[in-house]
Length: 135
Image (cartoon, rainbow, N blue to C red; front, side, top):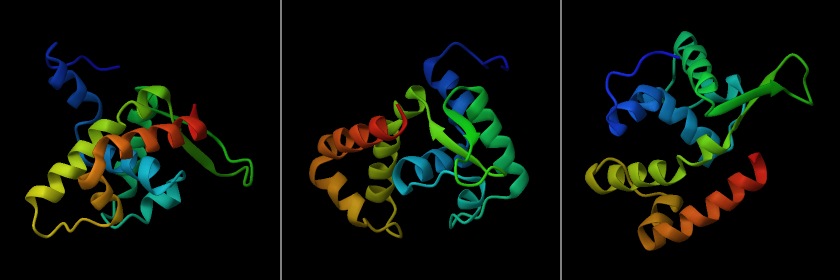
């Protein structure tokens, strides 16, 4: 693990997941059900393969994701959130809400409308789903 820039909690957190790609990978697992390298490559942001490999390795090294061989295809890995990764859900929801509020080109889709109506309910519902699926 690399040395943090400082002991500031915000700086320390950003050292782990502060680049846009890591948060988008976490979003894809949490909210879109993506679990494999090939599924992440199909995201609309079009991450480069070398960056995807790097970010998956960082998130795994930081114990935010875990990786195992797929039960359906032994030549494929699937990723899952750890408890530490699941704990990022409220942050991801807050970032989504903020982005929708201040970016006119980012319309609220179904989940965004649910967040706007009852953010705490969305968080508790997704936490339950993620804990059932990954924990």
